[in-house]
Image (cartoon, rainbow, N blue to C red):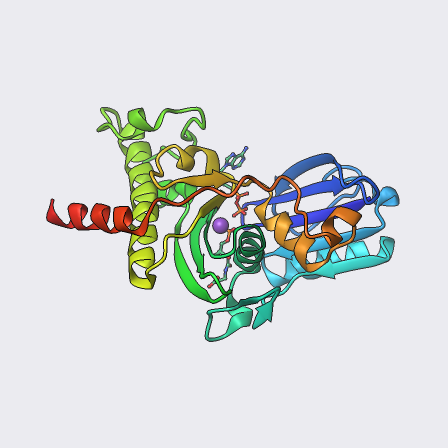
Length: 279
Ligand SMILES: Nc1ncnc2c1ncn2[C@@H]1O[C@H](COP(=O)(O)OP(=O)(O)O)[C@@H](O)[C@H]1O
Ligand SMILES: CC(C)(COP(=O)(O)O)[C@@H](O)C(=O)NCCC(=O)O
Ligand SMILES: [K+]
């Protein structure tokens, strides 16, 4: 079995993948913290022959995790942001400083779609752009839904946006604090994504397919007007592409990859942008 780990600032996600069949056998998530208990937080390591890790948590968390795993598993691969990988050139002045989850998303998106806009809705919402040809432009970082809400300190942190909510409802003015806050942060997130996408496509003269991932991807997806696909395993896709192990991975296949969404034409994107400027 292969154990894939995606350690975010809030949640540490794991999945077990069968190295023979490429099937996902199980998955889970625990709050990100320093100590892991194999058998409780993560699967029993006896069945694991290789581990692949993407981590943006504090260095100490990664060090502890790697030390624990190396004692029990022969192959432990830790992903890093580099200047270039798999045809993508990192847009950061200091490539190593780009969050490795963003780098994994950009690599997975490029492998699947060629140029793309990769949006990760987790603790932070990150919006990264890769052009056809592989130039990563860099991106945008805003606080995620939960962080935005917590920063207001209005006592609403424990009432999350119902992931089943309809976007229409969330776009109405709230008539209670909790709704005013939830609808406000939702509007802030989806309008930023819509606008940033249009601005960058306009600047670069190319309509890019958009891919969404992260814990809030589903609910954010409902308010994003741009054609897009939700790909919950996008960060894992980057790990698969960087450290291919199964037959399918070596053939360039990434688990759970969605159909690439057809972007609207650049003319339409520009018309939408011009219209919103006139209002
Ligand atoms: N069951 C859940 N537990 C915790 N957070 C959740 C859950 N479902 C959705 N979320 C949302 O997902 C976010 C965490 O998403 P994730 O992509 O795992 O973040 P990160 O990679 O930063 O740890 C939280 O900030 C919260 O808004
Ligand atoms: C921007 C992030 C905090 C997002 O992390 P996440 O929401 O997935 O936990 C992470 O990618 C990170 O720590 N990046 C380093 C800074 C940068 O990318 O510029
Ligand atoms: K994120």
